Image (spheres, chains in turn green, purple, orange, blue):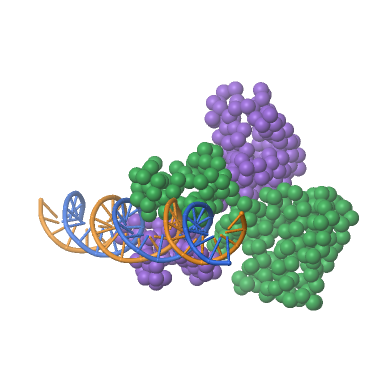
Length: 233
Length: 233
DNA sequence: CTCCATCCAAGTGTCAGACGATTGGCGTCG
DNA sequence: CGACGCCAATCGTCTGACACTTGGATGGAG
């Protein structure tokens, strides 16, 4: 019950949401009512609402049918928050490239096996569309496709949390080492690895996919750490 | 550049932070100056700042030496955000108990091996302190100690991201299945598993720790899913 | 009866101005 | 030299007002 009033109010509403007292989709009282209910001014109420909104706990719309509605954070929301957090921690050198890649190993290697087992034909198509030819595609296209490939593979495991957690990791790595500084043949090597992974997933060869993903991530780890040393001088 | 002014302003400052133009520790212009610089009212500025603050991108203090300072989100911050997000997704049944436990397997099983290899004597002490005796300790004490044990083990790996990601998972599970509905002998079984893990980590037996952790999490998975069925039944 | 334009009500979005509260430095007085 | 108190800077909060957005209600034209 300490601290600025907007924080107290935000915490109070937040607790109501977390406890299930306020159900997703439910509409909060309007700003005047909240202001009266808690005995604070409307500006204070609004600051509390902005706080909650930026945590994706509520969504606010305007108009006669508008207001603040309790919402459930989506996988994309969590992923985005995690990405900015990890990016800043990496920039502040609180986590190393090696630690990021180590986590990718832990998650993506078994994920490749799961994907090989559970993939649908549709997901296999998605995987195919996410391949690229570095001798043909533009830098931006390979860059985006590279990310998509890993994303699709994670999604094919059927566990949404895998994507939530892993996507931020390689997005951070990619924005850091993305378009330039890649040694000659790097993208070609990546494309080869992806093609191999695609074939193994197509054949539902889980063990093979696991091994291939491990090797692929080893390649990436080496390349990233080399780029990291270079960019750091 | 669309949307409410507070969102535009928040996005603008946020971009400056992400790009490194604003360095951690740096002080933003005060609210009046921001208000003048962007041509908006002070309330709008404040709503933008609340938005950034609740994402841990800035910290605001009062007084003559006060102001808003760029900050780097800590591991604890990220972990807390992830926890509320995962908790809500679980409550909304967008993720299942099985998926949560599956992620714990992926992360904690190899983590046990790493911890066995790299642990310091100090961390071993921490691990010992986090053990408990369900026949002696209170329900709350076992509950807290159970979490601590896994936390300490993750911390001993040396990779802070492991803790950031895994801690929310078992905190969500624990708050859901924590104090009650546990079948007879559950906590005793957990305590046994922990004691065994402690001994293996003490002996630097990485393979043994991995196996023990796998079995421990299998126990937990079974118990949790049973509780889940009951509470839903 | 249908369709379209208009008006209206309920909300949020934004601004201006004022005052309170907190903090840390500075100067005065014992 | 130290303690106390004043003061300036800054955020925190309130009030009141008005603009903007949205969706429904209203009412007239065809």
